[in-house]
Image (spheres, rainbow, N blue to C red):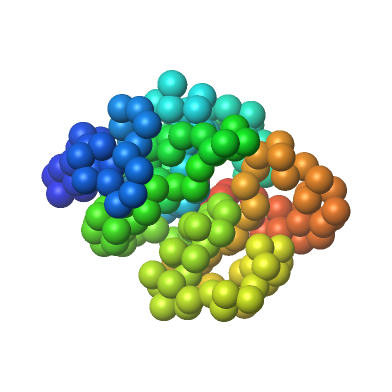
Length: 208
Ligand code: SF4
């Protein structure tokens, strides 16, 4: 990894911002930032935030959501975790904790404010971004000069991301692969027939 990117990633991994200077409530546990970056990966998985299992293991998408995402991409764990080929950068690097209903809280905004722009400036080689969920979609489309209209629903963004995406890097919008979205996937069969084939083709063209 290049020196500048390695140093930047090390700074993120030792970040204590949400304990020491949180914007609102402090993070309810010790920070454990989880990300995978390199200066050679041409494919970026831009996700939301680690869940509790990823927080415990320190490995991105090391859960049922990851199994489903790997199925969508048509790849195995070995390739998925080859960070020389695939970078994984969530909008919040640390598990944000649970809300009153035991759902995951949204990604911490401190990450985006302090880290993301600088991190992506150090990875100009990225050619395709898999933008998972609204937080990543809003951030990456806006960062690349194509802010998404607020009125768009997630299903509209996913179905028409090719229309909004810049040419390079190309953004492919995806729903979160959580099993909680199984109903949405069933109700929207175009997702598997229209979105997954070009997604797999893009993954195959950027990896070996
Ligand atoms: S969530 Fe982001 S900003 Fe907050 S402590 Fe973790 S790495 Fe730092």
